[in-house]
Length: 341
Image (cartoon, rainbow, N blue to C red; front, side, top):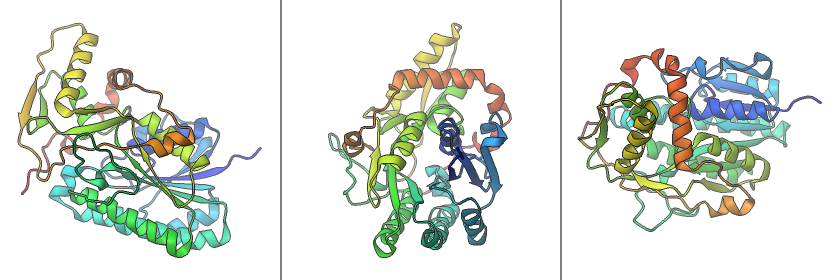
């Protein structure tokens, strides 16, 4: 039986590459489209059998190239993970976020609209973020019908793309689903993000910088749970709907850092001098994100990882794959960004 084709944009990145791996496990042939930015990494897919995927280096803003790919491979689904995602970088330079997260999505939508006239069986899944909802008060949770209140240029660019997609769903009746996920962690995450940065600093016996007083709360989900949720939604989600994907595990950055420090020191079995230090906060830093994921749970999806199990396996991955870290360009993740006012 011939494998079905699925297109993953941003497939060399953290979530994208983990999704590619899971799709291949589920017997799909994956077309990866990636423009190879600083956070893209060929090492993320080098272990895969090349018979199971096709890598195409391209910007999603290249409409002609996207059109050619769609017509050649006729994918049953497009998972759009191509995006600039680091809030600190968006504070320093929003332009690339507008280009990728808004203009790039517009190009994908235009090409998918044309492709949809020929292939009615294909679906488009747009992967967004919980940050579009903005600051969430204590004991409150974002639901899919809530208004968007983005705080950072990154969140605003993702909110804009979500609104653009919703307009295309209504106006052009396109088969698209939006997902809004909480903070991801796990293997292959570029170390500008909090959890891998903390783990790598501990491995290198360095201190752990936490913004402000460390009281900002985030909901954390293992990337494998996220990827399985995306495939689940592709199969069972309703066209035109949005789905929150969360873990219900919400904690402050300070508590998270303490947990990681404890787990690492327990594993190393040797003296480690790493400690938490508090640094200047980022401008416009949201205090709390929290998702209500009941809509997805009612469809039958369940997470597999507890936070502690996920953190332990993530620490193990970075310990066992430190060559992966060493091959990264340090200047792309060691310099502090996002301090401009």
